[in-house]
Length: 144
Image: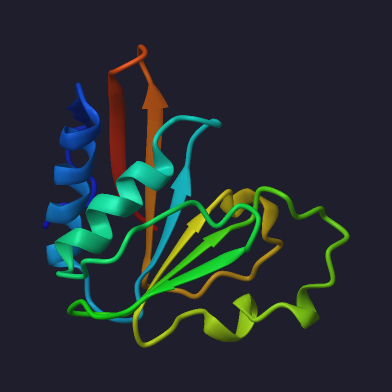
């Protein structure tokens, strides 16, 4: 897979999910995907397709209030974090995130800019979702 490929233009929720499923098929355990985008850009929609692309059948929802949702039953386990509600003074030592980076499964993190790091080396993928219109998104994938 070419992680620094041309951007993908999505014109529907299903198209966004399909794109994510293709990316999921190429990912191996230990990969951390950082999901960037504004509120409502489609990060959780993208995760829905990603989890389905791994063969899991459970409902995928935003972990905004729970911080972490785990999805098991696919080719690899998925740990879906949403850091939106965390503040810079968050005591990261009481959270499990630093110990999970990287995990044996796949870690997807919404709002990664709220995490003070450090990030693991060699297994990072950035997913940038830009809103073009109410139904259109432009998705950029890059390996860090």
